[in-house]
Length: 132
Image (cartoon, rainbow, N blue to C red; front, side, top):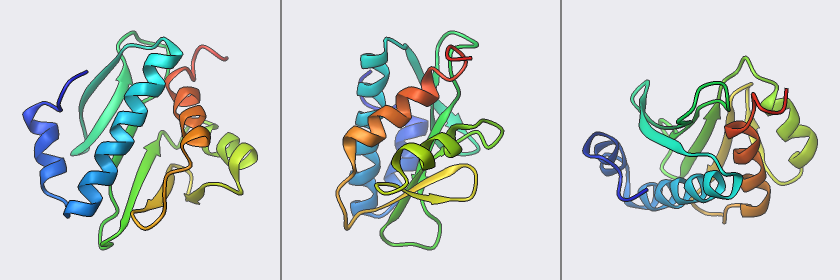
């Protein structure tokens, strides 16, 4: 997938430069994880946030990303709170990832992404319905 479409790009353009760079790196990780998992994804906006969902229905669940409101350094990846994904993420990577509630994995621009753990988490989301 190439550059974000103009509506998605506008969301990235609206955040501070450090958060924008971090979000674009997270976007790249999502796209790479999808490719590695053999899942074609669509990039769109959901609830005004960049969202990545499998092209085919009943394959996986949507992954959304955005800057954390009110934070100069925070950004997050969100999954559907009605899934068991955050529970699985906590079990697998509770020492490597920071969580908020039942839907968010939160990051800081001041720390590098734990890429291996995160790629696995993204793949679990994008293939969520296949594993049932």
